[in-house]
Length: 228
Image (cartoon, rainbow, N blue to C red; front, top):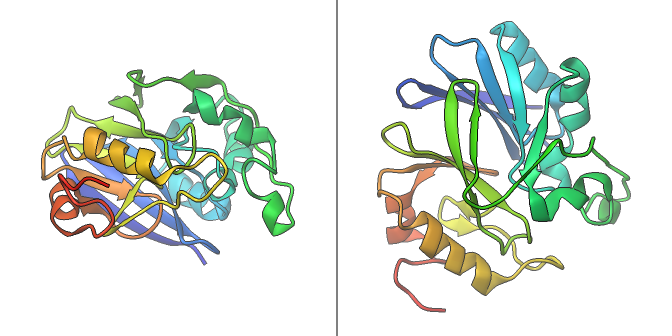
C-alpha cells in the first residue's frame, strides 16, 4: 500500500512523496506554499493514492514531469491524465518512445503491456519548465537509460533536485539495461550533480532523500573526484 510523506525542503517549496509498490517507487507532488497549483513527478503504480492526496488538498496539477520512461515511473500517467484531461506530459526527448513501448519501458519483461499516453512536450538538456509557479531546469544525465533527465529547482535555497533513478542515498541507478552505461552515469553524477552546492536536496526515484554533500562523502559507487 502506498505511503505518503510531506517535505518542506526550501521555502516556499513543498514536496509530497507518495511511495508506490511493488517497487518502492517515489512519485512527487511539488507545489508552492499557499498556491493551489502543483506538478506531478513520475506517477507510479498506485495512482489512486496520488489522486486522493491531490484532491484532499484541492490542488490543481499543471503537468506530469517524467524523469525517464521505465514502467514504474510512468504507470500512473493514464489515470492522472484521465482525471485532468488537458494535463501535459513532459519527458526527455530520448526516452519518449518508452511511453508507448512495453518492451522499451520494461513492463513486457514482467509479463505486462503497460503503455502511457504519448508525450506532449519533449525536453532537451538546458530547457526550463515554468509551471505551477515553479521554475525547473532540465539536466540530461544518461547512463541509467539514454534519455534520463533530472529537474533542478535552483530558485530556492537549498537547491532541490528531482533525480529519478540517477543518484540514490549511498547508491546509484542500475546501468545494465540495453541503453544504460555505468561510466556515463558516473560521469553525469560527478559533472552535473556533484557540481551543485553540498546542501542541495536530492529527491530520488526510490528510497529516502539525500544531499549532494552526503553523496560526495559517502556514496560507495560514485565518490567525488574518483576516476573509474
